[in-house]
Length: 272
Image: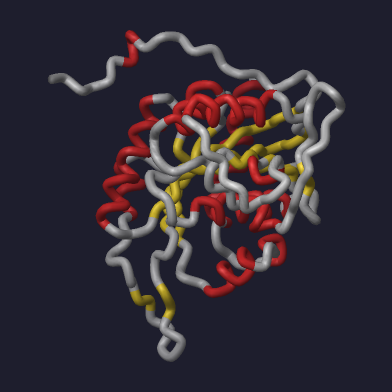
């Protein structure tokens, strides 16, 4: 049996367009092959760093059944609209957010839906919400199935960031995510390795709790940035308090630099 993908025979899938009241500059997907690797923290803190640099930023929380973004920013619904479209909720620093948890009367209620309903809601978050952003970050659900396909095929993505942790199993899963992005022609800008190490409080040495890092994965797929985040109690503390906007570290600056550099290059090419 030949399991290779023949993209030349793939059906044309029209893109979903934002509504006429929206302005979306660049759209960045934050993806992971499995859960529990820090994808939502990465999405949230990338938004925080971009906002600190003066850009208008939004987060579309595409993890419908496991949303974490409202919790990280301590925001609640209800989402309101103008009769046709909806407005995202703004955080205290002005980051625009839409998430399934902002639609629920009780954020602890589960969303028990099949894939097509989840995909439809994600499209509505993109097309029926009034965005005014230079950068829209999409916090994806883990894996390479319904949610990833919806976003990669239906949205006009500028680029993507992959999040992983160092274990060999996770490295294998990274391969799947990277190959999916390549298959669907989405540029990969950064491989973020979360929980990469912990620093000894006495000697300052790095202790690699989950084994050696895998910078070669970034090089293998032509990903320009290999960014590392260590175990840091500050991260959990700020996320748990819903105060991610007060976290101040050097983590993810290299990824933000790559996003800004790539978007500038893209803009320059459009203007030529």
